Length: 311
Image 1 (cartoon, rainbow, N blue to C red):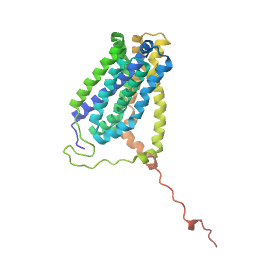
Image 2: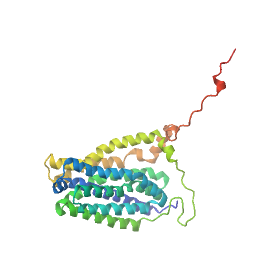
Image 3: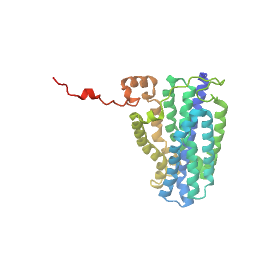
């Protein structure tokens, strides 16, 4: 892979970070607007739960296909297409007229957004050297909390000023404009495994999917991430509505209170020492090699070894 100038790599990283924050703003819009949407459509809490769950269902389903597509065509156009598509369906949310239409629009929105996280991690691998990737990936993932922190500060005033339908239109248009900016400033590096001039280069070695699925560490991380997401996504989705309905706060106050838990989370995530390459290298040396590769099948002892030796 051709080494990029440092300035280009930094610009690509900053734009990816902003894109993550935009995705969280678009995602938080529905949580902050749930109270008004519920009143307009006469929805119960269970109905609103279905709307929220529709997002996460499609979002989870697109993670693997998004990574597969990024590996084959490169990250740039996958990132751009996902941003454009989720921005369009963010704007289309304003056209919803019933519970069914709202669920359908949000489901397609989350399918579009679900391809972005794996594409963004692929982009980090494309624009940074191998020893810098863990640190930069950790910094990029801190945008999850930064986006959750910024989203209420932006969306609450927009909903109060424009109403929830026009607020969705505004952030949808902003996302499409940002996709154009990303297209202009981030270079296309070609398909992975090929040089820009079209000459083949040696591809990075990858473990087959079957071997990865046999890795116990992968399953342990999935369990941990599942539990963490239950807390984080639950707070993201329901805390604004809880504060509005159960605590009697107004939307302006909720917009100020909701970001507080994510301020320290953003700092802690970006400064996590486990994300430093030196820590990962040191930790890797302390772990047994069997952690990172499937165990070899043990051969059955030969029949000669089982025979009783006569004196």
